[in-house]
Length: 157
Image 1 (cartoon, rainbow, N blue to C red):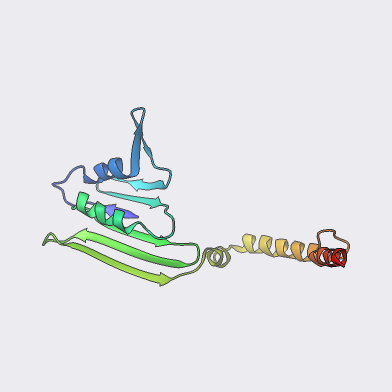
Image 2 (image 1 turned 60 degrees about the vertical axis):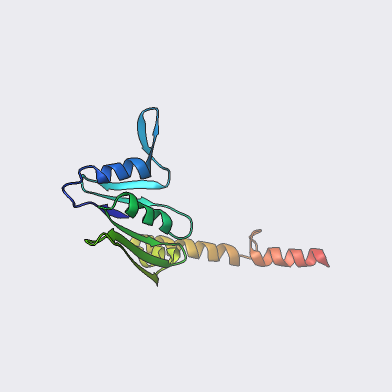
């Protein structure tokens, strides 16, 4: 997620958002919530990862616009099954809330792992697949699924 505040008249908008929305205080120290990973924090902008169940919390995003009207908010998200999207919100010059959303079918998590393997990872993956195939096709292997199935079938009769 990216949040920026380019209004020079609002000095601490981004810092206030971080303290009030992304952190909690414990023994006088501010700590990020467990679902927040800060990537980069500057005076006028932040970039962070925020984990949530299923889809983004659109109500929370909209509440940020009301609390921090000088901020521009962009939330890029994806879920394991491949659905992905982007949500952008800001307050325009007419003091109107503007929200743009786009959702698409993307690559699932397994597909990303497969498509972005380097040569060493591909070689290791192939070796592991071959090992599994050799184990499962060896009739003397006690964990061979065919042997287990046959044994279970014989025990039932």
